[in-house]
Image 1: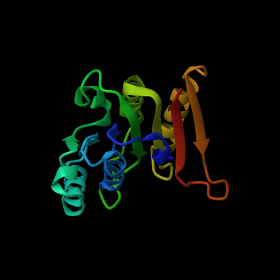
Image 2: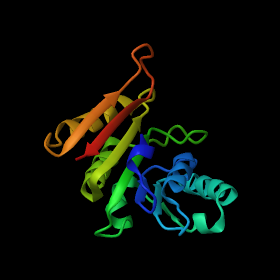
Image 3: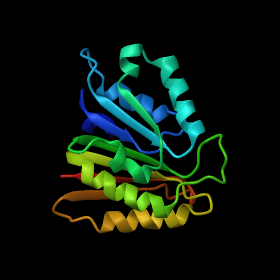
Image 4: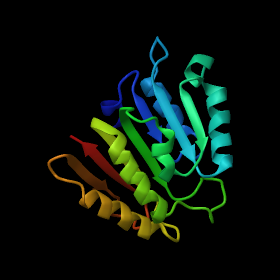
Length: 181
């Protein structure tokens, strides 16, 4: 889905960079011969930022690597990180815990809601917010409720919001897509 939204030289945000796989995919979507485009990545856990940085250092050339700005910060601080008046094409969230990390450290509704509000404010028309919600851990269902309530409150004239879920696996992660018209 990202490939149909993101164009070369766009600015995108990985709101929960985790181990860096989404950040890497985003770089590949925005980079062109002129090495323009920008990827902002953030995570509240320093180990996630370090893991992302190591992955990018290993798999990107120096010009591509310069396109990524990583921050050890909560996704609720997105508006402090992405410069004002920046037109963002994609904001991606993976809500839950860091794969391979401390499962006691999770994203929380109290920070995800302001992050979604910030993402909707910086998103350009034709842009996308993608949210993977891992519901199989304590707090996961509450966070899903927060995401759904936020999406349900967006004006129909300006947004198309969808939820994709597996019906034969109850606790599988869900995908929520918010497309800004």
